Figure: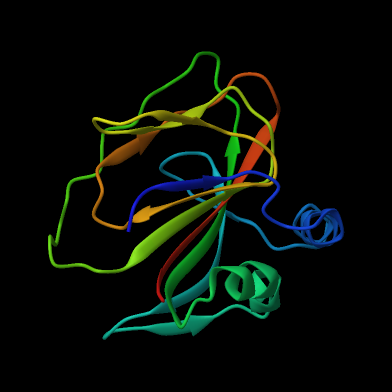
Length: 158
């Protein structure tokens, strides 16, 4: 699997329906006390824990288009803006035999980005998806230009 970036991933209708649901005042976001950002776990399946949110249907258009067979983990993250761009530490490759993929779906245009180690920068752009092997080294940055930036992260097998 190579790294793929696709713009206008969802139809406008699919994008706006999903965006409206996750930005509704009644959508349950949870505070990450360590970072000050917010999250909503949609799915987590592993040996210790199996969890599905009542909002799992939000994944349907993306799951169908990616032809996902098994979701390992799916999270929505709402990042609040920072005063300056902050780079997080690159992830460490945990399992070189991990054959899963990870996709990042961007709901907003923002001035942050993903840096793929020894590769390119992928800017946060509305309705864009970035797909790469889960064990590919990368890091993301914060943003400074909008109040919040929402990114869906899905780890899965096809």
